[in-house]
Image 1 (cartoon, rainbow, N blue to C red):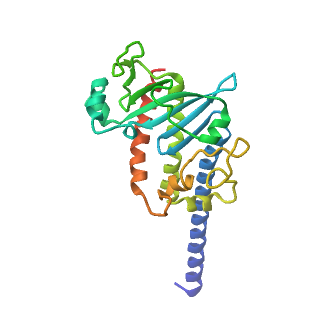
Image 2: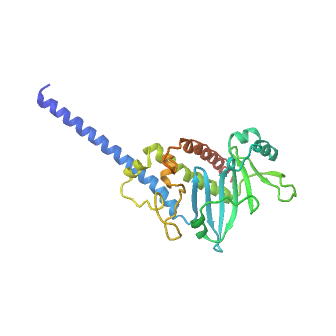
Length: 261
């Protein structure tokens, strides 16, 4: 092969590589923008949802009288003690239910949406209004309010629509950091692919009803959810792995109960 042909082949390969890199960059930018658009929809939705860790958080439903219904979702492990297994089997769950994860869903009335901006997600407390336990198998157990026995529970056929909507919203929001991590590795790489964009409320920002809604409530907001770092800067890999298990439980609950509606 002559020197000229060698040069032409090298140029062709370089142009091909440039086109490949340009195409890959365009694909990464498109994916970053799509994920960013999903987040913006959460921020601008009048029904507000925020999570404090993967699969755990609240949805705030504005009501016609100006008040707000908060539906809070948490892993039952946060409320369990060493006797939890026997306790939940006595309430109506079986071994399979427990192995598939159990969530507690509580409901509380809030005066208005400013409460959500000020205090964020908070468990209503079992005695405040109503609550249910729901397994990743779909089984729903709640306390029998007609009995004076605080440990008398019964099974429900399906989730209340407000509860199912909150499960769907918290589950969907919790998936976003995992999508970012899988596609870009780190939050910094996601922002690089995204390009210039307003990320107030995602990695910085003021509080209050006039400020952008903050859907990811951790020490460093969305960065913590994607990168898995503690406040002191050390890596907390279990935060991501354990969180995925909780999110998977929610996804199963959503799938099973959506089919019942």
